[in-house]
Image (tube, rainbow, N blue to C red; front, side, top):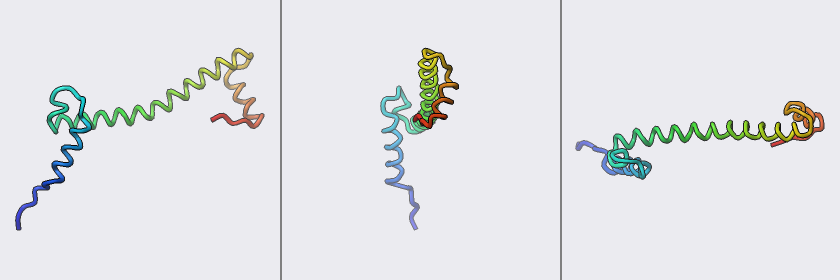
Length: 91
């Protein structure tokens, strides 16, 4: 029985990684091994960035709401407590 060498699947896998590495400098966009490492690293950064984005925006909203509340003589926590008592939900 002949030995199977993955054939098409191997080529598809390599092409997929090299396509994702398009735009990287030097060998990181040309050679499979270094491209694979860079793509993996980039995808990890992207995943982490999506999580950090939510955190950053929430803190930005708190700063903005707090600043507006201070103009009206309240601090952030007093303002939010007042909204909760009034049954108003912010998204």
